[in-house]
Length: 171
Image 1: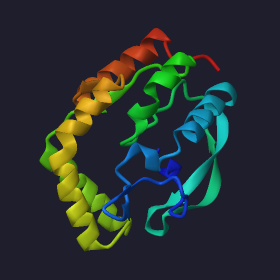
Image 2 (image 1 turned 90 degrees about the vertical axis):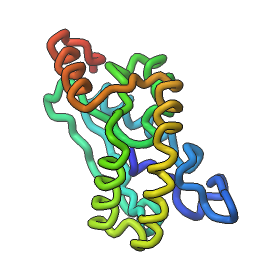
Image 3 (image 1 turned 135 degrees about the vertical axis):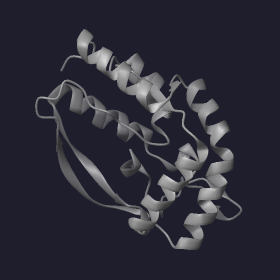
């Protein structure tokens, strides 16, 4: 879902302290994400954006094909923002917010962001520390939006039950 951020020059981007607030759900194009999910469920494929975080913009699009997969996972910090609408449209088999040790999340995020050169190391470190501190509030927000908090193994068990029950939305 990270590919659905708005371009850095979008006038609707939220600001905090004179800077774009990339941690705000308003920095993300929820409507476009929902439409792509709907296309994937209806047709099994869709053109999805490719967002370059280090450039703050979409740089391309690519064809995403589910092949014969019975379901797919859409994940990202703002995924819970669309739970209610996806549920209303019958697009949702399950919604989960990962509950894991904050230190592990911090290290995973930092190593990924450094490897992908998403921003400069100083920005990534300060952003990572801020997100580490905010993580309990983020989890509360996600569960308030309809996602179920669970550890990774429990999410895998729940997804396995969905598959076994044939629960995913029909195409």
